[in-house]
Length: 119
Image 1: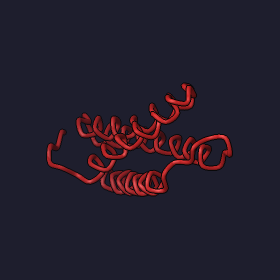
Image 2 (image 1 turned 180 degrees about the vertical axis):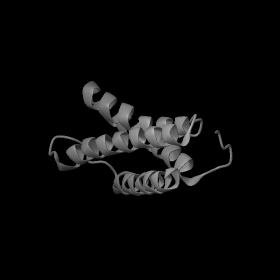
Image 3 (image 1 turned 90 degrees about the horizontal axis):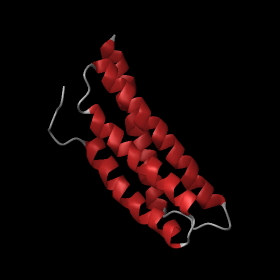
Image 4 (image 1 turned 90 degrees about the vertical axis):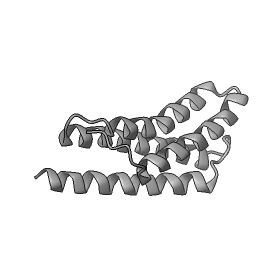
């Protein structure tokens, strides 16, 4: 079921993962390894799951993998908001949060429209 043509969600989640790598590095340098690992893992997992969905075995499998990506995006949002609201942590760049919100909206639309087509 793989479709090798470029699509927006694959590109956006890949670029987001690169931004997450940079942001989590700040916490690694501060010796806040647990937080750095959480942000790194959830933030890069979004794109990994979207990429995996490109190789889905069926439409149902595609939807399932996109739902996992959406869950990872939601968890990433939690960690970024925690950083943003804490007085002891570095606040994420606003672009990181706005990019994530856009990804969440796109994933939601993909899941919704895929479910509709599934019947």
